[in-house]
Length: 620
Image (cartoon, one colour):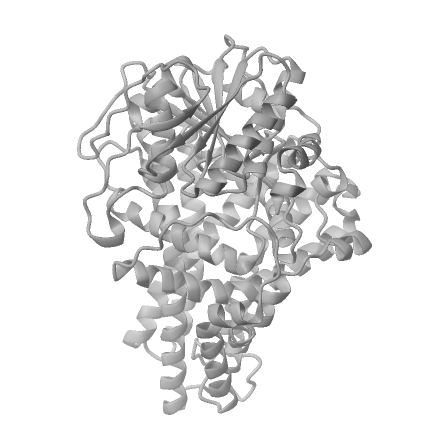
């Protein structure tokens, strides 16, 4: 039973649990087969990825085999292959995406023929979030759509799973004030559930089962989601014109977060994200994915095909499906519906966590959700690409312990060969610490080439942006853009070892049945105390200090120094990244994005609304 406040009449829509052990086809779905041209693209991307991986693995094997392969060196080769294949695929995606963007420069993407107007609900789920933020975002979008006189009809639902009664009261008051700012005929509804069953997926499901038959489509949002009227209308037009599509996903850009960490994430998403998204969409076609927000979904298709069962596995692998979005996309695709991503759609936004510790806390929950997919990847009837999306989500977290194991294996090989005197060079700068060889220059070249493959997508993003946006004025100029790429690369390289340790910890916690829990995401920048930083980063600090001591003692290779330094300096690095950078960016132009140079109209609209919805007397 839910607490209601001025809700429309019920329009129930059945949403049965799906059986993951038997195939299912929706009679209303067009049952579209994968086009042969998409299949060719997929095989081409796979071939390019595997060839690049094979070349690097072959080179590494040849270097290690010069003195005979030991068991530990074979382990290194396997771990290297498992990690490098994802680096190779990212590079292939970036190359394809850059070519597409350069070819499309100055041209508008092809549009579908217009379909019939849709009745659409904008769903804004919230769980103990700041009411003025959630309601201001939702109200601003509805207000902008009313002003745009869209041919589609829109209503907004704020779907509260808030457990704190004081926050819930503030949500109701914010809704009441929001209604006074809206034009006649624009509806914002508020519903609070008594029980937070199955979290966000359960929240959306409850809405479908109570009101879904009234709306042909729903735009699913997050608490920090924001889209312009043009973006929402474009999503609606895409869905209306494509009767075989059940879900159309936008590619959100990051906005607002003023900390250095937030700026780095915003810049990386804006500078590198477009080439990677274009590259991925080129070969995934109608087998796209869903990221849980900033997407439009055909309501009846979702209810009929995407009801999530509870997992019967033990411990943290069981219960509610936490990373529900990937699975819902796979279920829609299994039933015969198209799932598409539209990378060319602009003015779709979200916010990033303001500090490194906030991302780590969020990752603890996300890692549990993605690792649950291990038990789902073999579900009956899933398309091959749906399984790939699930595997990609799993590997985004599993790669951390694989890198850890690779480093440990490399250390073991280093110690082994130092003891046996295998290294034949006295030039410490030219040999790869992990690859004993009579040809140290060859080993060092492999190390540099691997680092190049790691950095290449960023360079490709830089080059394509400079090519497409002559002068790069919206990025602080060509020099500012190039400098920002360099700063982002250095700082992200420093963060990577820290994230590796924490993601490995998260996976170990899950293996031992320790759930990450479910807490609201930190969205506001704030000062992080030294004690909090020490308590949060003590483990990687100790690992870094110990590794540094072993390097100084000659037990470990000097090439591990950058990793050891990043870990040892985790506390100051985290403190630096949580600092606000507004003055620095304004003075230098470094790390600027187009959204900084020209503030989006929908962002300005929200900024005007928030003080109205949260007066100072209540905001405190």
